[in-house]
Amino acid sequence: MQKPSKVFLLLFIALSLLGAISFIYPREGITVGNSTTLTFPSLADLFLPDTSGIKHINQLFSRDVLAKLSRSDTLTLPDTCLADTTATISDSTAVKLDTTIQPVSIKNIEANLPSIDLEYPDSSMAALHYFFDALATIKSSTIPVRVLHYGDSQIEVDRITSRLRKKLQQQFGGGGYGFLTMESAEQSYQLNITSTNLWDTRKIKDKKDRVKKDFGPFFSSARIGISESAKRNEGSITIYRNNLGKIIRRFSIMFKPTSPLLLETKADDSILYADIIPPSENPQMVTVTLPRATKTISVKMQADVSPLIFGLGFDQNHGIAVDNIPIRGSSGLEFTRENGTLLSSAYRMLNVKLLLLEFGVNVVPNVVKSYTYYEEALYQQLVFLKRVAPNASIILIGVSDMSQNKNGKMVSYPNIEKIRNAEKRAAFKAGCAFWDCYKAMGGENAMPAWVNAQPPLANKDYIHFTPTGANLIAEIFYKALMKDYQKYCATQKQPEP
Image 1 (spheres, rainbow, N blue to C red):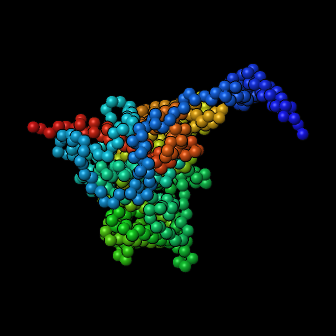
Image 2 (cartoon, rainbow, N blue to C red):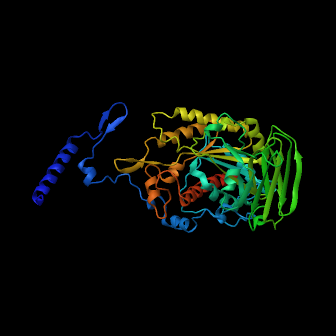
Image 3 (cartoon, rainbow, N blue to C red):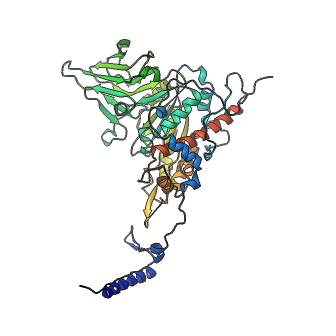
């Protein structure tokens, strides 16, 4: 058995050797080969941890804001879907406008939120005039004004979109869940949805589908299988919710018929639509108005060749609708793979007035000196979208903060700001608006504060927002959007005295 004095002496010698190595070892490490760097912790790293640059969530947001978010942290029905909402204006100061523009005052904006303004290629805010025009005259519209929110995995499960939808519908009216693809509809926690006969789903990001087009505006299409009994392609969808008719009044199905299609839509036991639809190169949309007592919607299809089913719409007949379109693993460079003619037709049919693009986190792990390649590729996507959606506005939401482990400390990737700047330049060059999500989070090294907040605002992968964090980002963005909408209304023609 070793004597304690010998054990202590051995430990002392070992620590002394390690201390000597840490003293003489280069702080920047030793490079081996072209890409490997060997580092060794200094004594200061071990005994005096570097706390510089560490942020606390209370430095970024007020306690009052965080407390309110924790009380309303939910992605359940009240947050993702409003029943028939007629916007009522009660606070803020109304602005006098001409007779075609409604007086505007914005409600439900948290005053203590940081103000992270939208940015534009010029001072005119012309990049958002199509959307703001639609909002200003929304009461006279007979169909919903639609917002499509495209993004990477940061917006999956309706994150960010759900809170933005709620805020916009509270302000401008409307309700419902927006459009869902067949895949997302079957995974929905708000609705009980079943389908029969092997629905096959294709997604624009899937490697096996990269040579294909006609994914539709929601970047996913489904097909029905062959029925053994009828030897034809046939399938059905059943949607159930106890108070369905109170939540949505407008049910739609968007598809592309590739052969004569027999389509029937029922609300409970009442047939609302039944017809044979001829094949077409353009998307088609069948919309029915549901009775308020509706609990079940059923759709039946039959065709020699399966149609491409793009999505199911759950909306009101007025107000605003917001669709969540996540593309896992995407950097926002898939739009030009779509059939431009089909996409343009679908956007017109849907009355799309705003495209939100939220990408960047999938570019971050690829650390390079310059992101000119990404800037140019993203610019091409925006030019394409402006061509296929000439009457819609576009906002590019920049990359969020994202951390890596550096010497035991979680710090921002060194390329975040380069990617953010590349995105902003691409947006401005294409004539689009830009919103800085990275800045909204608090900038460099904000992500650890979001992860360690109570309640947590981001997950421990140091990439993705929690539902609470997603709601916070949506609130800050909505505040910026409505601030500029008020400015837009104030600049409209004043009525003659």
